[in-house]
Structures are given as structure tokens and as C-alpha cells.
Image (cartoon, rainbow, N blue to C red; front, side):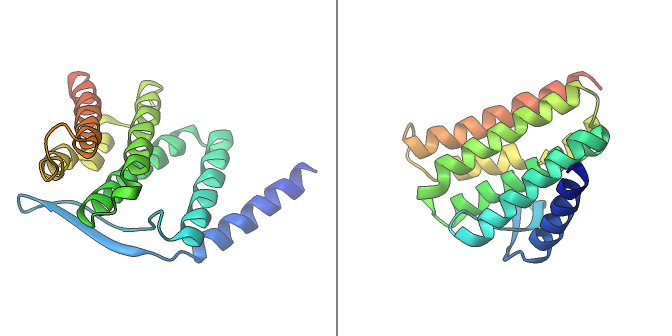
Length: 171
């Protein structure tokens, strides 16, 4: 039974990783590249669902077999979530803003747990999140002060700064 689950998981992971529909995004802040990645956004329903399944399979697999790899993968997902949030905000897809902020903040919380468990290095977190706080501040300021969108972006700024200060203090 267990071997069937492993085989099905491997097949699903292969299918999901090879059938991604993506949008290329490069976000820049003061001539510094924040992130350059291919992302799938919530408005790409099928691709987004496949992406989420692939991520969950990878997280489960790494959780069982490779704790250090789980930390690195969590950092990678945090960077992806930040890039998705930038994309959603820059392309005025406000209907996805709350979901994107929630997913980003949740991923940073998971990354903080991986850091506490020493499964990811401070340098990895610092490099993966470099510039996001500044970029989120710029995007926040596009919205009128104290509106829902402004407050959501402020949460992203605050959460990023808290994790980065935690990492820098322990260096």
C-alpha cells in the first residue's frame, strides 16, 4: 500500500511539474532586482490548482524524508509568494490581493518555524526576502492611506521586516 502511494506521488509530482502555465515576472526596486521567477497566479485556475497540488506533494515528501530540504523549499515558496504578491499588486488584480497577502504571510510564518528548527540558514532567508519590504512599501503607497488594500500591503511590509530583523539579530 505504502509503495503505491509513493509511486502515485512521484507520478503526480512529475505531471504537475511538467505542466505549468506560467507568467514571467521580474520585480525591481531602486535598480535592484527583488525577484525574477515564473509564477502562476490565482486567475489561471487550472494551472494554479496544479501548482498548489505540486507544492503540497513536495512539502509532504520533504517533511518525511528531508527536513533540511523542507527549510530550503519553504524559503523558495516564500520568495514565490512575495513575487506573486508583487505581480497581483502591480497588475491591479485587487480581487486576489487579500488571498496573496494571506498566502505570503502564512509562508513567512512557516519559514520562521523552519528557521527556528535550524532547517534553513539566515543567509538564505536574507537573500530570498531582500528588497521585498521596500517594494511592498512602494506598492502600498499606490493605494489611498488606510484603505483595505493599503492595510494589506502594510501587513506584508511588517511581517517581512519582523522576520528579517529576527534573522539579522541572530547572526
